[in-house]
Image: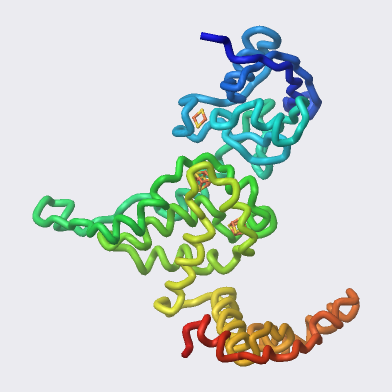
Length: 317
Ligand code: SF4
Ligand code: SF4
Ligand code: FES
């Protein structure tokens, strides 16, 4: 059988240790179309530089330990082929960095403590009824409930979504995409007994997501953490003790729906006032005026002519 053709690539690795800080190292090696980044790094470590550090265990996208940034994209190194990346960027020089957001420990190895803290905040296990635990009753999961939970149960705790999320960086009260995917998996499980407590943990945080969809794009298991967040928001109407953030969020959604069903357009100023109230809107008006953004807020879009079609799409008629 003919051998797979090899190509030379240069991996530029952003290295780190606490004494020296960050620096770049370059490694040249030949790879074929089957070589994943974990294999390339293993060869560099054993053949060129034993001091290079990275994490990997399963080499089959299951353990979640090999996350890193490859040409700027958060990826699992074991699920990414070197020559695929070279081809995508039309360049055999490839940049490898530790994941964003996580504190580096050594080279590509990062500190997971904060990630795990967020994950454990959502109580990531099933709290079953006493009778079930005592073996006196059985609580079966219906196939339709199983289908709802299945996707969100596939998370491998790799952290790629968190490293790509802009909201976790700026908002300490936001639990982050992975924790929300895990939290929703139990919130929606009919066998679970702590729904009220889960709503308390998850609902305020769910309104802190910016819906940028970065977590959706990078997840190697197609889990769609942003979908879990949307579904969690839908529990807000069932929850009485809402935070201000959740109340503003709900008003915002209602105002958007009202604006679109009335005019077919998003009337930004009206939506803003309905969501934040008159007083806060006046305060923000001063800020926006200073930042030269007032003109955008005051744009009044003309209503669309065939509003009936819009209402049909919204399901109103
Ligand atoms: S959609 Fe939300 S959770 Fe996902 S990356 Fe953006 S801000 Fe983060
Ligand atoms: S949701 Fe996806 S990207 Fe995020 S930790 Fe789980 S598997 Fe990784
Ligand atoms: S080594 Fe386990 S997910 Fe990559």
